[in-house]
Amino acid sequence: MNKVQGVVSAAKGAPVALETIMVPDPGPGEALIRVQACGVCHTDLHYREGAIGEDFPYFLGHEAAGVVEKVGDDVGNIAPGDFVIIAWRAPCTTCRSCLRGRPWYCFDSRNAAQPMTLRDGTALSPALGIGAFAELTLVAAGQAVKVNPDADPKAAGLIGCGIMAGLGAAINTGGVSRGDSVAVFGCGGVGDAAIAGSKLAGAHTIIAVDIDDQKLEWAKGFGATHTVNSREVDAVEAIQDITGENGADVCIEAVGLPQTYEQAFFARDLAGTVVLVGVPSPEMKIELPMIEVFGRGGSLKSSWYGDCLPTRDFPMFIDLYMQGRLDLDGFVSESIAIGDVEEAFHKMERGEVLRSVVVLN
Ligand SMILES: NC(=O)c1ccc[n+]([C@@H]2O[C@H](COP(=O)([O-])OP(=O)(O)OC[C@H]3O[C@@H](n4cnc5c(N)ncnc54)[C@H](O)[C@@H]3O)[C@@H](O)[C@H]2O)c1
Ligand SMILES: [Zn+2]
Ligand SMILES: [Zn+2]
Image: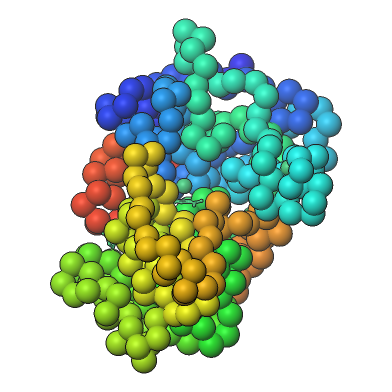
């Protein structure tokens, strides 16, 4: 048993706090990871707000890179000393989706079997089956994906959630390809990654939409060719102006709000694609004219984790980063200590950062 300090969300809306966490040694199929860096994602804040579930206490942190410390029996994909990114999707190989050859949707993704607990034995719910705002965490070995060890852990960890979600929302779910026009609603870490992914895929026009001018300025750095402040102008009209009155081929919602989803729906060209990658809260509803749902054709899709297959996508994006073709460092706004996650949430809410990254070890 290992004893570490970790960031725990104890109750809905309450500030997160550092607690002593008991992390078991790995059993069969499990791996103990020494976390080097873990980004603060908006989904951690959604957990703290009770928007994901009511299974408090949550052990937060899920965008992490680190080094394999120990592995249990029956582990073949990694060994102690390997540099890995932790994934929240580890395909089971046996669910109906895996069996149909679609492991990127796996409906029964693997996690560690043993619980991590508080000192009094209370089992923690690890955020997205990870829990990585701590020096050590226990995961299913399949969640640990080996990548080039020369990558900076601060940048690499971001591929473990939000940046992968955004890149994949554009490339995998949206199928953005050469010559497409793309509009991205919400230019936080996820939205900017969708912009970077659209650029990598060869999009011709990339329109960044946000209510914050600083965010729009950063979005240009990742490849936005046009920006729209939707607090000042009508986003749908602005996108139509930019696209010759047509609308964008792919509209990516990266906020998680009904109003931005509706903007994405109406800003889309005929036969275009809407991708919802922002996470709504349970009470949100959308109302759309059904004739428009039919008449505009195309497809309305959701993107779970950018439809990524971690073993395929993580090493590839790290290689693109190492080649200078994907600016992961640009997402790292600041390095923080493990005790500063609550303050990082406030910076996120004030729009001051793309990613605060907790640096450990
Ligand atoms: N689908 C997935 O697998 C997945 C993975 C990670 C994160 N997410 C979700 O993606 C969303 C974005 O995450 P993030 O970490 O980038 O968050 P963030 O807080 O860094 O960014 C959100 C951005 O949206 C902008 N925004 C807020 N209201 C807006 C509005 N009305 N119109 C336009 N822009 C608006 C903000 O200014 C900010 O720039 C969250 O809902 C998060 O939970 C989804
Ligand atoms: Zn499966
Ligand atoms: Zn996340």
